[in-house]
Amino acid sequence: MGKFRILATFLCLSFFNLFSASNGRDIITPDQAMENGEALVSAGGTFKLGFFSPSGSTNRYLGIWYNNIPMQTVVWVANRNSPVTNFPAVLNLTADGNLALHDNTSNVIWLTNTSNVSDPTVQLLDSGNLVLTDNSRRLVWQSFDYPSDTFLPGMKLGFNQHLDWHLTSWTSPSDPSPGTYSSKIYGYREIGIWNLTILKYRSGPWNGHGFNGFTDMKSAEFFSFRFFINQEEEYYTFEIINKSILSRVVLNQFGVVQRSVLLDPIHGWKLYWWFPMDQCDEYAECGAFGVCNTNDSSVCKCLRGFVPKSPEDWALRDFSDGCVRRTALHCGRGGDGFLKVTGLKLPDTSNAMVDRNMSLDDCRDRCLKNCSCMAFNSFSEDGSACLTWHGDLIDIREFTEGGQDLYVRLASSELGMST
Ligand SMILES: *[C@@H]1O[C@H](CO)[C@@H](O)[C@H](O)[C@H]1NC(C)=O
Ligand SMILES: *[C@@H]1O[C@H](CO)[C@@H](O)[C@H](O)[C@H]1NC(C)=O
Ligand SMILES: *[C@@H]1O[C@H](CO)[C@@H](O)[C@H](O)[C@H]1NC(C)=O
Ligand SMILES: *[C@@H]1O[C@H](CO)[C@@H](O)[C@H](O)[C@H]1NC(C)=O
Ligand SMILES: *[C@@H]1O[C@H](CO)[C@@H](O)[C@H](O)[C@H]1NC(C)=O
Ligand SMILES: *[C@@H]1O[C@H](CO)[C@@H](O)[C@H](O)[C@H]1NC(C)=O
Ligand SMILES: *[C@@H]1O[C@H](CO)[C@@H](O)[C@H](O)[C@H]1NC(C)=O
Ligand SMILES: *[C@@H]1O[C@H](CO)[C@@H](O)[C@H](O)[C@H]1NC(C)=O
Ligand SMILES: *[C@@H]1O[C@H](CO)[C@@H](O)[C@H](O)[C@H]1NC(C)=O
View 1 (cartoon, helix red, strand yellow):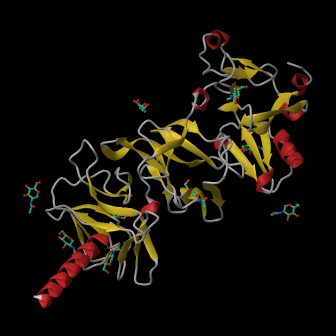
View 2 (cartoon, protein in one colour):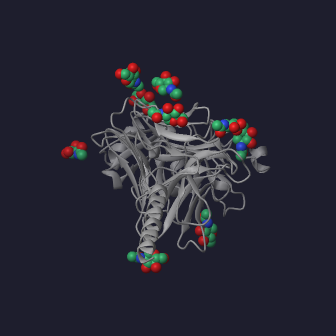
């Protein structure tokens, strides 16, 4: 009797161990596949990889979500374009060492498709990154290189020679297929948000601490933000300083970027920050050489020395034609100067040029010598980079606090005037 009970207990315990082991493992190996209903859980228990259906959909997807919070929050989807419709699905390693998702007829629905990998292992890390490594533990493929709509601590937004790390919105909350919005780094270290090919919102350039157009963005008690640049890669990333909170950034189906934080699973996710916030965040709201300020009764005005191009439209609050110079530039014949305007979100940098290690005076000379140069600024936080803008100055806004200087080229005769 006693022996039986011990044996039963032993059997129960081993059963429990087997059970929790098969549900708690964090790796896939060539002889250990993952099937419908199974999941990987990262070693620290933070993330889970498994099959899910978004609410309102019967399609199944392979995805990663937070393991320890009640509301399923998906952060990555593998087969965004090709849901599993025939169950059960199988996730295993192919003969050449790639991770493959098969439906019940063994069709490959999704594949990592990198080079041949010998002795491969797939592991779900506690950062939420799914990694494929070879026999020498060399990283061959990682889900962080192919973000969906969610930006997690340690992920990169930017590019290197081979990869372009960007976010793409879901089509809708019930459909993770790529929506029309995307977000990536462009110009001089700025984030843009596009609807298909149309730029809708921009962050302004990185100024050493944060993005110039996000005046409230500073590394502080909760987050540390970083823009990293070297010969090989250029990217923006963030970390959470207090490990007891969770935070994620999502590009939603309407092109809004939202940072949420979770302090306590009971209270759930709280919206912490979002962008765009107001009318002046709309790209080119005031047209070329216009300045946007939500506090001004007219919202848009022209830079000093410029006048509305279409005064009738402007009076009717259609600012899209922007502003034109009141006095033509002299350019090569001398007689141009610069007006220092302070507290700005700097204009779109897609046509800006950068010269590293150049003083403000040299930067001014450089701009003055080039007829297409309309403005310049120097970023002292970055070992004095000289930024010169060529062509129309687009998407400037004015802040009451924060913002940066811009030296705008004007005919000298405009510089003496007091209006
Ligand atoms: C495969 O999926 C199809 C469609 O859902 C279903 O009819 C069929 O029974 C499945 N086969 C197996 C072996 O599960
Ligand atoms: C992976 O799973 C599919 C579907 O079950 C199967 O056809 C295939 O042979 C498996 N691959 C390997 C290498 O075991
Ligand atoms: C795998 O990559 C190769 C080369 O880039 C490409 O030709 C092929 O279509 C890809 N296969 C799949 C299944 O995506
Ligand atoms: C993988 O190796 C096999 C056998 O050597 C070869 O036929 C195949 O082209 C290789 N695939 C890739 C993607 O390198
Ligand atoms: C981290 O945040 C939690 C929740 O706000 C707080 O209780 C805790 O004191 C913080 N820890 C540190 C080291 O700041
Ligand atoms: C995105 O652009 C498309 C095409 O111009 C348009 O039909 C759609 O309404 C836009 N989406 C949103 C959410 O504004
Ligand atoms: C910057 O320029 C100065 C003067 O031309 C030079 O001495 C210095 O080495 C340069 N620094 C870098 C980082 O290129
Ligand atoms: C002026 O700047 C433009 C844009 O960078 C450049 O293409 C052009 O070559 C420059 N002209 C001179 C004379 O340096
Ligand atoms: C608008 O004015 C208020 C009060 O002066 C100020 O607190 C706020 O920051 C201003 N907003 C902008 C966008 O300039």
